[in-house]
Image (cartoon, rainbow, N blue to C red; front, side, top):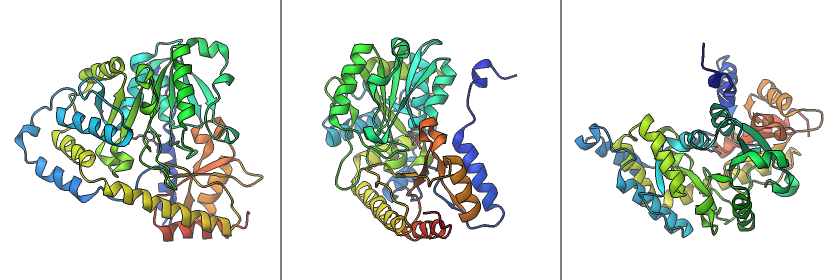
Length: 386
Ligand code: PLP
């Protein structure tokens, strides 16, 4: 029998979605999958080349140092300085992670006890729930509403939840709503966190992806942010390295120490060759990142133009590679996602997969070619729903 804490884990939402899509494709249909957040483009060649040569270095065939090689943490600190003007001590304020995901789970393990409350955005990335469930703490959902630009309203949090709240997740550029944060919102967040003794976990997975010339801001740019929180940064999306499993936590040194501590007991660190390639990604030319954002922006424009032609109107995403689209009248998120799979062979993520406040929306990823995105709109158009 599994331990009690495992029994509280929800079924992994994307695992279910992938299974559904695969089952449909296995019947021989031409399924277009925009449901998952898995970048379709390859890792830039210089990064792959660096791994190839690094793989031959016998130093890396031994156990890597606990907490990662200094050169990688220095590369992270330099990138934050260059991109956000944020100073980080590479040894005390940077932790190497197995993708952002490992840190997002660990933060709940190191800070939450049963009876504590974690503030979680709704809709939001489902892995926040998993970490909280494993810790035995409770969740208090913060609805992200369109009329608030998909930012949480701190004044709407129930006082009895706020009293027990120890941790809060934020995620901008946001998955799934594609909203970006403002400096004012982050200033309000620091004040709110200080006043209520809450640690802020800023998930910056889509930090590099902002459109129309707007560069998303890091929570760490906010005055006082380092006193109240950490930020999770991953190479998965910025450098198309989802399969490599590299990420970082940066910020508050006490929390970084706790993340490192739990990792000391669970892993040594990543394979040295991957650490070297990750340092190459962060320190080398960032031209590939500019090209990536331009590619997603072109795809976004193509898809929205085609959706407008079929009468499906929505605001364009400001950041991330997701589109958050309202479902037509008479459908729920789930029934509409099922309809698109069954009648258009298009996989989208139902909004309710990200929480109850996702009802009325579906999420589409800009993760295929412009032609295939036009095809998606054409197939949906043929259903005659708009
Ligand atoms: N945070 C958000 C909001 C994501 O969408 C994802 C991946 O889809 C992650 C974190 C996890 O990324 P990683 O590959 O670094 O574990």
